[in-house]
Length: 170
Image (tube, rainbow, N blue to C red; front, side, top):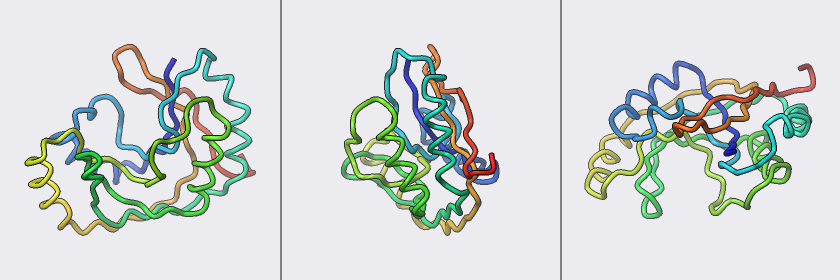
């Protein structure tokens, strides 16, 4: 089965992201706007096999403030446009602990926390859309108090297997 770990932002930020994803993200219907903190990995184990480790990791970190501050792009690596976020130490720690605890390969690229709003665009589309979107004044802040273990269904959509609240007072 294919698993991943993500943070879902508030409905307010999801609505803003979806206003662009509807038009520019072919994965719009497969998963809500999210911040990936552990890329997809395959495991023959049930998701419950990871529950104890993920609960321990969640207890290590207090809720933290996530700040979204601009629109950026991964070009020339890919024609993906995203909301860029700051990287609080808790998010960086979660990212590293999840890669140590869960099966799968090390990440191919450095950790750049983001919420995708457009992907798989042609070069011309990317240039046009990015030119417009980077002019947006993005300034959003919210407290993150949980992350989610997800699994992929047969129709390629993702759903939550379990949610883990941050902090010792769970």
